[in-house]
Length: 554
Image (tube, rainbow, N blue to C red; front, side):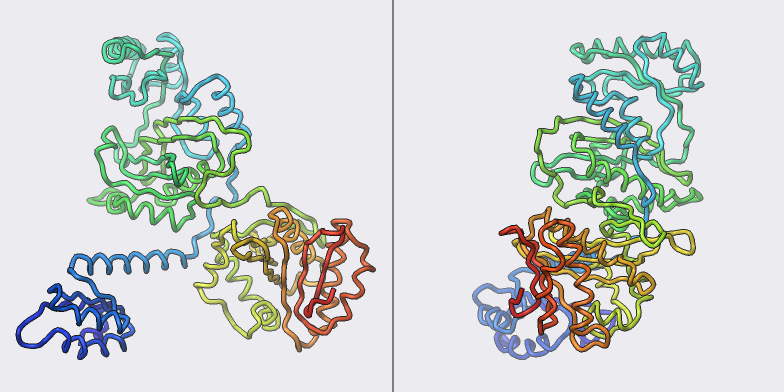
């Protein structure tokens, strides 16, 4: 039987009416087996009105039915796509770029100066400077206003060089002969510059030539030419592009698009969807391209899309990639003015880096920051080292380990609907170890948030929990959430009503003291309650902070 075969993942049942056995009887005989199957089963009843009863039986049995094989296959592909998407959501991306910090001040000054000068497009040198500020390797580049400056720049860079024309009216320089490669002498540079000017005058007479870009020639004969870019969609905002580059980029179909922000898993999936994987993996003696360098470049471009609202378009084309890494040869960047008070244009809220802070506690420096998708492995190690008692208090059940799917869910959060802050301390092996977490999940209306907290055993009793909860409450107040709620299981030795009251006494004092709304003595009724369900409401009506602990007592 097909459904029992181990190498069969799903079955498409197709039937065309015959004069021997009515379709309705075939449906009644086969549908029970389909219902019992744990594998997906789709049906296709061909024949219009002749199989209407069979289709009705399938619908009554909860089995999907389609009128044509094409529609049934399309439905199966939807199931396959859904399964792949769910699998991708459960991946734990490797930690990358954590220590990388772009020169944001330099980039902002560069973009704002260009907009102040009324430039819609960055010149080549400025575009290369922006890429370098984000850690993307570029070739040595110089700007020249006339032919003699171009010759001087070429002599300083060293021959051979590439010469490119600069004009705000010319976007694709190759279309008008505005690119000359492999110029090995000053005479060659002069001749190429003169020829470019003549070509522009003939092919695009309205263009104003502002000068030339002089670049060192990249000696990467076996490298693949790629394109990495940012475009602006009217609905989704900034969109990332990756694919095969070069002068015929518009004619090639091996491209993939994605919404920022990316992580390593999403970047790798973007490369796979472009169908360039076999070329980048190496063939016929050609070494494989440096995958990590390519993924890092995609992540940095994604970071640009998230951090630079001035970018309307960005094309890095060609981006050379080989076993030695990546090298950006050319880039064009279109700018847009950012209206005052404009909100985020991103379809997905990126990592909120502004919420990072460093604190001193117990003689050590800790980094408090929102969780990232790349923290999945850290979270796994944090739970693995926790004591059984701590795990029970955290999850309200006894558990030895957290499933892979839960780790992905906890580390890949929607920053618009939830927030998780983690505390990182210097680890024994030189990295950063996770020592605490606090998370809040909000309801759809952002009126109430439920929080949970866990602190590593070695850091308990040092005030770290109070620091994290205070940070979370301050965040929820800024996000205008009406109420935060937490819970502690009853009946645990050292963690019953007395333990709960002791634990929350410090937090409530910190909450009241931080906002100056009530003295700690006013919280005395809080410790005379009989339930172990705690609710903390950051409601400042009547000038006071309300903390209540089950049964509505306050």
